[in-house]
Structures are given as structure tokens and as C-alpha cells.
Length: 98
Image (cartoon, rainbow, N blue to C red; front, side, top):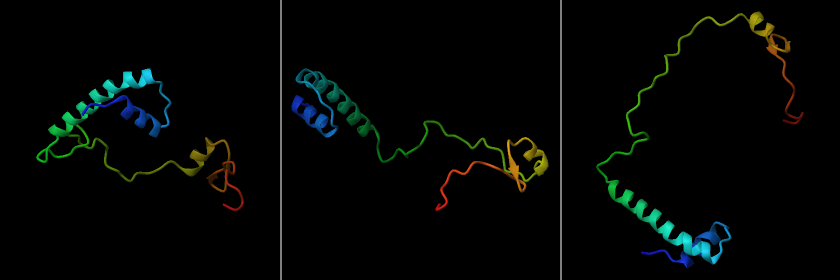
């Protein structure tokens, strides 16, 4: 099925894109090529091919979480611009009602 300039005009209208008649005539064959390419991909994707998120199998490269000693509170807060009651002091960003 060949796309006509009227088909492209309707698509442009739905996308709220203003196109001149020359642009419609120029884009119709280009969109036809795109639709044919998508149709070819749809033919290749068959039920016996499992869906994947990557072309190659990936393995998790993250390290295991290990519980370890953290820095002392005093050392961490010493590097902070402001601290109060053993916590970082930051500017209020929410109103009183939040």
C-alpha cells in the first residue's frame, strides 16, 4: 500500500505539524520506505525467537553488598558545610504545610 500525500497530510495534522504540499509530496515516499522496513522486521520476529533486552547475554557485574564499618559521624560532618544534631543541615525546600 503506497502512502499518498493526503495520508501524510493526515498524519501531519494529527502530529500538529504544518507541511506544505511540496513537503507532503517529498515525505510520502520516505515514509513508505520506513513502513516497508518496519514490515520486514515484523516478518522476521517470529514466535520461536524469545524477546530479549540486549543482543548479547549480559551478566551482573556488580559486587555483592557487604556490611562494613562506616566512617565516624564526626569525621563525616566535619566535611559538611553545615551540621546540626549529628545531621547534615540543609536549606528548607518545602513549605510549612508539606
